[in-house]
Length: 233
Ligand SMILES: N[C@@H](CCC(=O)N[C@@H](CS)C(=O)NCC(=O)O)C(=O)O
Image (tube, rainbow, N blue to C red; front, side):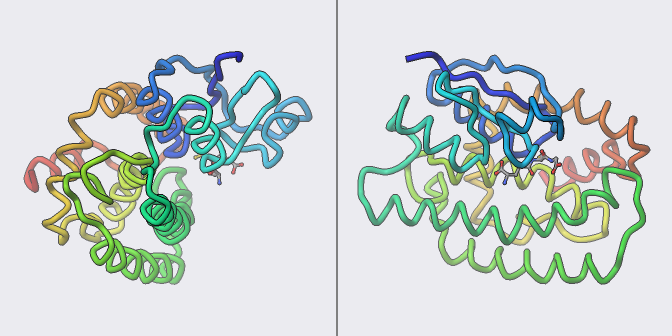
């Protein structure tokens, strides 16, 4: 079988999640640098014109959850538990993080990272949803040290890379970070930060994110964010 090749850009939380999964699965850290696009060539591989997409050798595949499941089935098992109920619980967490944290925070990316004005009503609605999601995560997550137990899963990878951007949104708009009032998650964060996949992905995120902010005249202040994180550490 042809080795899968990931396409994307290291500012994208979804690309970073998929790349971390490739690394965890022993498929290497290489990728093809690609920005989202709407031309026919791009859409042939990623029908919604989004990154990441995976060249499977049998055709392009987009949507991170589909990419992760494909990688897990072809190169795992590693990122989903053996037990059917535990697997479903991982997918439950993945959906909560995707729909009720990533999407509402993404609605605020233009104001935080792309130089557009803040819409206070949109911010209120987004944070109402993330508050609800964080309550759910508090209820569902074990953090022993990973979200659903002692083994890393795809939900950990998604949550970690989504929190990376979501916490910056919170900071910029004067809110606590999503995990700041969740002491149980300290152990999880520590475990995730220590992983080789995290170190590789975040090392590439930093310069790409600086370039991205500069190109868009982002209001977001990374230095102030990092200084605040040191105080919280
Ligand atoms: N549901 C998609 C979301 C991917 C996504 O939102 N990608 C962003 C970058 S993080 C993108 O390509 N945005 C360009 C666009 O929406 O046109 C997934 O799970 O992969």
